Length: 408
Image (cartoon, rainbow, N blue to C red; front, side, top):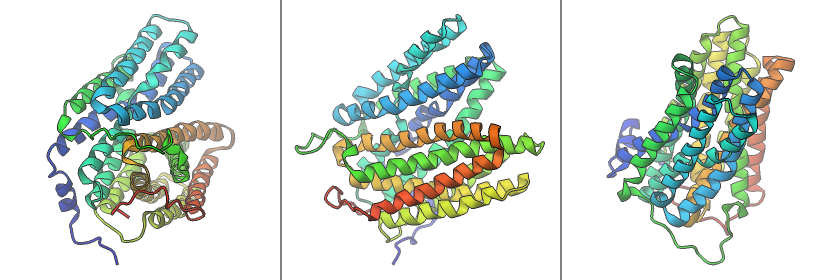
């Protein structure tokens, strides 16, 4: 029988923010993670305006995303070992210095090779979403409120994914080409400093336990979750590019923003509602149901014929995404040891980011060659793949590596 129930939606979220310091660190986290969605697109906008070279712009953005995927887990391992206060300012400083130098180099018409050299250390940007979730775990570990906290942060992540690019592009076009990524750097510094000064909610550093591997990747469940996150990110990437291309084909380019807002709104509302519930089914069972729902409700994307139908299909698709992200995050909290929690959370966020970059790139290529429907076929394929991969959770259970948690 489900325990969902007893609390209203608002009261569930009011309850989690009753914890001292929770409002402050969550707000700081929003400021600090917004740049993650601003800097990459900001680099593309800046290069395209100043040099008119879209190939260079895309290549730099791809290298930045790849660098982040490689460096971010290492930063998070350091956080698990030494603490947020010790590591985050250093990582942010490296990233801000590198990207700041990149902006200056572009303005001074530096050679292309130097731009690639500078963008690589820019990937040291800390994965703030993982840091915030680690703080929630420190407060609510083993409690039902943790799902609600994860739900809230998933909605914040989506808000950043939607708002960040709009803000960045708007600033670069409206003010000057470097304005978007520069604003991202300012927000990163501000948010990181506001977060690390909050020592009362910083997770404790757990001593390393003997017999543990160097990375959480030794757990096959972690790999399954990462692949699922890559597939979900691919859907995000297709959704963004597809909305722009489809509305242009329909001679209604201004509708793209509304369609994307409906997708984010459907996902956000579903996430908030789901986060206030506490089903009795195991996390693996919940993830199987949620990923299957993503696959089924992505199919209408193949059937749209006008902007109104596209909007409806986006609402349906969006409504399944946030619950899946919430469950996957809760599963990671359950399977990784406390001293590697930040690393585990970072790998899931990184997987999502890699998927977004992959989905955007592939969708653009498919649309150019075969039209918009081919991009939506990619989204459906990714959704089906996510559900198939989720089924692998039941093929080889890893009870020996699981950490008990009352969330399940």
